[in-house]
Amino acid sequence: MYAKKTVTLHDNLDNFVIMVEILRYCIPALCVLLATWFVMHKFYKNEEEKRLWELKRLSQKEISPIRVRAYERLSLLLERTTPEHMLIDLNLAEMTPLQVQAHLMHTIRQEYDHNLSQQIYVSDEVWGLIDNAKQQTVAFVNSIAQQMPVGSSALDYAKTLITAYRTNGDTPNDIALQALKNEAKTLL
Image (cartoon, rainbow, N blue to C red; front, side):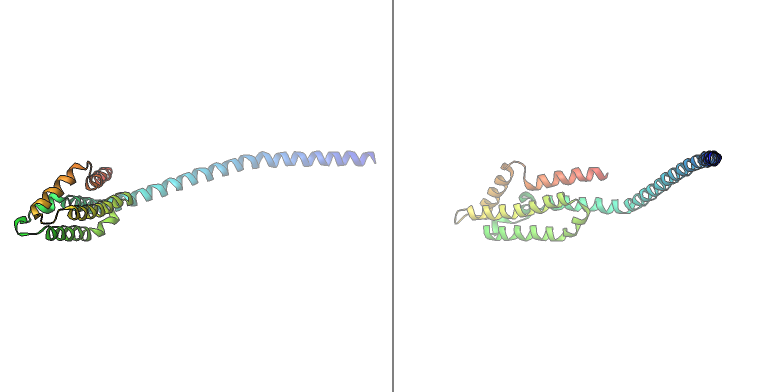
């Protein structure tokens, strides 16, 4: 029985030595495998990032001029819908305040509708400011028209409109235009 235990102990020792030998070869092989996987993973990730960056660069090359034109058109929209600009070419002597108001409403809606598709090229924040500027300008034009005394001339309405528009500080059009310019600068 004693001899049997020695053989068993000897066998266990041999098994342990074999296991150590196997581990001596497997651990470095496993380390090399993990290092190779890590390097290859990093390489493929970098290649994917380069490919996406190149694709974005090429698309930006095509999209950028379109976006610049959109910024230009929207800045024109904001400039053209200020009372001063809308009243410049009107023959106020031949119009009533109601006709001037109707003309201003038509001009604002026409300019806005003409540039509606440009919203896809600007951020939601900037488009929201442009939309707000349109709504505020419409409300302002209507509000001044309602405040005018009966019998006022179109010239009186125009003067009151321009004076009130510029004395209210930063107008919604000015705020939207500044946001539009700031966003355009990030593109350029």
